[in-house]
View 1 (cartoon, helix red, strand yellow):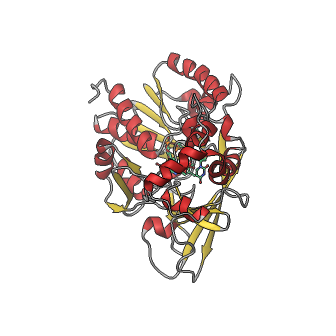
View 2 (cartoon, rainbow, N blue to C red; view 1 turned 60 degrees about the vertical axis):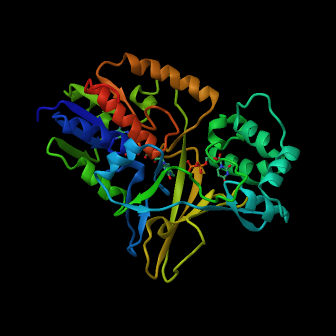
View 3 (cartoon, rainbow, N blue to C red; view 1 turned 180 degrees about the vertical axis):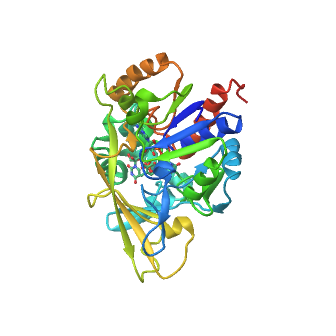
Length: 367
Ligand code: FAD
Ligand code: UDP
């Protein structure tokens, strides 16, 4: 087949770029080394018919009307606001930390102004906010930092918060009101039939062909595409020539609980200080599925395995920049996505990046 573009990876980055280019008349071939589309957002039914996310819980949220409108062409939505509790000192308390978290943890009866005043007495002001320790200690002081952030972060990343950029812990804000939603974005919803059917519709285009179980490394030498869109790990593309760029991995322990209608009160419970896993998610909260059985997943962080998270810290940033400089010299190749751009992107940010990169490839102006 005459080929204009080869897209490596059928996750959000690859699928969205493929759809945009195909809709503009280009012939696009998408490969993925996994046996399925949808990348890490892949969902499926387990043996008892419960819809689960194979690679951990994926909750869609965005402030971008453009991203939401684009995806809405391929899916209907089920409104869903994610709530998370953290297991701390034998209690299940709201995280992000809010007014109820502090009152219930310490047996206080503060109001919002009282909590602001309380934080003033316990916070340790930091002149420059560089690390994840800085951002939390500067806001709520050492006790809340130790109980809710430090243990979770050490488990998740194998690093202390003082070794990670502030942007990591800043993902989970601190509130003085009673809002117990995990996200406050204007759009919070789950694809009605799931992520994988949404991806099938994104990729369902006469100009798109798909080949699964195919690794770029096998076909790289013989590809004749005019342009390549690469969404895999950037260091792998360059044969790790400057050394391996660290990505954090996870082991997912899925469990089906036949006859159990509800395992836990909210979608996710975090375990900052106990267990080897960071959190347990019960999927039916996310999907709205009902019935007699439920399914959960535990996430065990690990250094080896599939790359899931870029690790935002200074030395990794420097190493990434060396690869990025090579990428900029690579003719007719575009690098996009969480692994290729080494950015701690949420799904909507990847879609946003893919939409603007597709415009660039097509020579269209940014809107
Ligand atoms: P990926 O989904 O990783 O897709 C890249 C694809 O490229 C993969 O399928 C891979 O197999 C393929 N590939 C790589 N190299 C090659 C090669 N050499 N040859 C062929 N194929 C290759 N985001 C949210 O917005 N909300 C959430 O709740 C959320 N939860 C998450 C939970 C977990 C545990 C994880 C790990 C991530 C979560 N995310 C969440 C982030 C979300 O998964 C990513 O933003 C998004 O899936 C990234 O899309 P991508 O296309 O860049 O990468
Ligand atoms: N975090 C924490 N305690 C929590 C939740 C999060 O310390 O209860 C920190 C931790 O470093 C984590 C980061 O905040 O990696 C981002 O959390 P988020 O829930 O956004 O992680 P993700 O869903 O991307 O794994």
